[in-house]
Length: 179
Image (cartoon, rainbow, N blue to C red; front, side):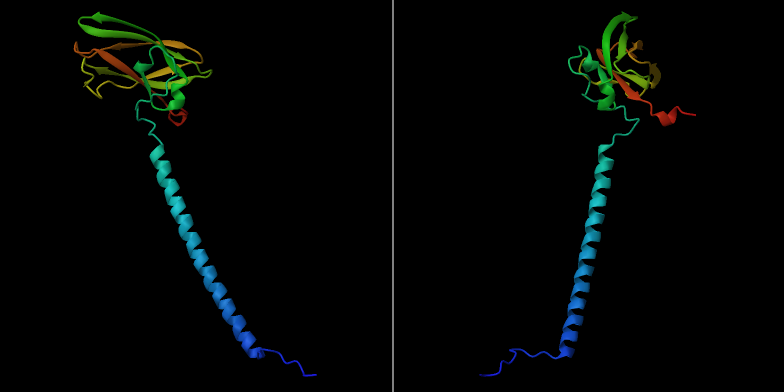
C-alpha cells in the first residue's frame, strides 16, 4: 500500500504570517465599521436636531391653529398657538354692537379644562376684504381662566372700517410666572 501524503504542506511560520495577516484585515474592517457607525450616528443626530427645531412653534408666536374643539359655533373667531390649548378653550357666545361707529365685541371665552390656564389674548381686526387693520398694534393682555370658567373678553375695534375679528390666545409658560 502506498503511503498517504498530505496534499498541502504548510510551514508553521507561514501559518503565523497568515494569522497576522488575518488580524490586520480584521482590524481594518473594524476601523471601517467604526468610522461608518460614527458617520451614521452623526447624521442621525443632526437630522433629529434639525427636525426637532422645525416642528416646535415658538411660545410667543400667537399663530393660529385650526385645532379648535370641533363643532363649536364660533370657532372661526378663535385662534390659538398650539393644538392642545385649542382643545381646552372655546368661545361660547359673542355679542356685538356699534359704539360711535366702532365695532364693540364682548365674547365669552370658556375653559373646558379642570385647572387654571394662564393666558394672554389679543384681538386682530379685519376689514370687509379680509385685510388686517393696524396689525401688531394691539397689546397682549393677561387672562387667568380657572377650571371650567367662562370669562367675558371685551374688544373695541380701532377704526370704523372693521368688519370682522379673530381672538388670538396663547398660554403663558409656567417658567414666566413662577417666583
